[in-house]
Length: 243
Length: 50
Image (cartoon, rainbow over all chains, first blue to last red; front, side):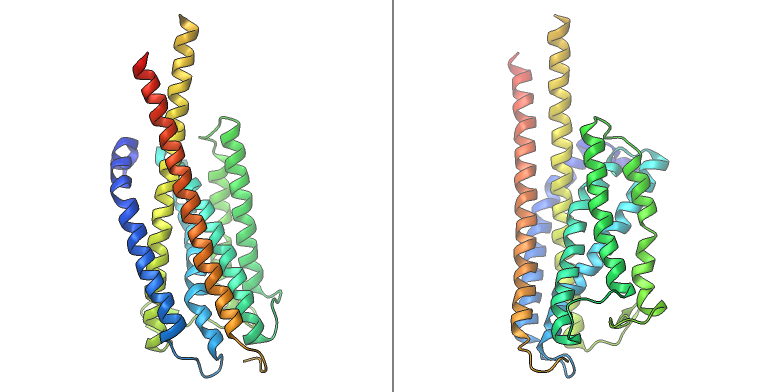
């Protein structure tokens, strides 16, 4: 893990991975979405609205997975002071917020034809909305720490760790409380989903995950390049001051 | 299933948001990365010139 604490080594790896991840992710997710629109059959109970599954479920998994990654990176930053962990957590936050919001909107678009309502204040929907608000707060906190010149501030990392308490609440909400939302159809090693939906869903999830990885690498490269430019300008200003 | 509704409008809206939103996310991240790396390279060049 500490082998990648060297930004130069990390940048070499990131440069070689960014575009392949993006291209593979785009091709795989577009193929899965084409299957979702034109290949997959309508479902017996939910009709054609079930096709929203291929966008909604990957977005939900990525929204939750991204905060889990922020929590792990925050722990690594706090315990081991890994220099790239904080940068990684900051880079994950915006795509994570996007996928959480996409999950909420597509869930609402699915709820109207399937349940007859756009929104209900039940455990699953409300805890997912809380996750989106947590992302907004994390982004504001990380931005404020960066503007104050405290990019190594521990506050966003502590917030990232504390916010992770919401992830099991989202996951178990449909089991703990009554909900219009269906319980999980897929768990470790078993699935109640028909193959024509399952394989398309897995392809869409892998495709969007690869795009997510490429976006995180791009955002990490941008943060590192900004920091390097800033350090260079500061060094030149100090040299000019000494002369 | 809620009867009497055409589902396709909801499906198309979801796909348009998913594809369009992801494309915007990728493009803004790519542009931010290119801008930052150009700024870093310019600072490096200026350092060499002096």
